[in-house]
Amino acid sequence: MESKIEVLSTVKIQQSPDLYKIVDALNRNLKDKDLMFGLALDPQDENIAVFTIYRT
Image 1 (cartoon, rainbow, N blue to C red):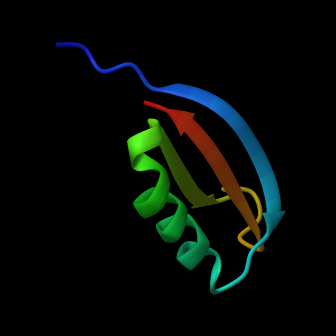
Image 2 (cartoon, helix red, strand yellow; image 1 turned 90 degrees about the vertical axis):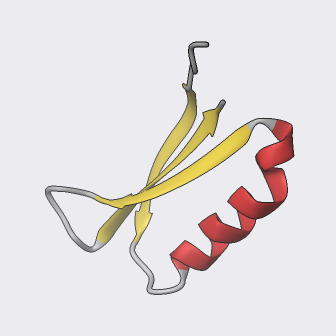
């Protein structure tokens, strides 16, 4: 069984301490729709967060 993850969208936004709460809520509520959400710091600028939407 092969798992294919497709990137649907990526956006860079201003980092905020509570962003992870939004990503967590989205992941908990939309996993049954085959969606997954990610959040990472931009390697060049730690004040920028990279938000990514995946289809699983």
